[in-house]
Length: 83
Image 1 (cartoon, rainbow, N blue to C red):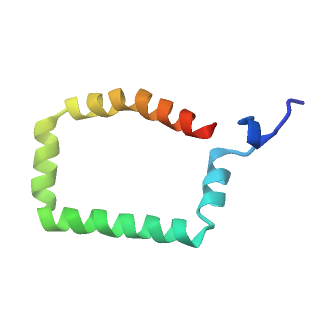
Image 2 (image 1 turned 90 degrees about the vertical axis):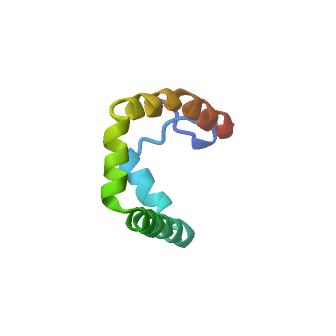
């Protein structure tokens, strides 16, 4: 059985869903998540859902490509913060 030391970045054997559940036990995390969702919905309502949908439609598949190109640097930053 492989070692499971989270300090060394090794697997703890927990699934990502269980890790997310552990993170969201914090009152600050739940408050932040709730605030983020409320602000997201408020901005959508303020800008107009039809206008936002139209802008996303005009952007097309290019917006997905840009998001995918952003993932490698985001992953590298996250790995850098782990040490």
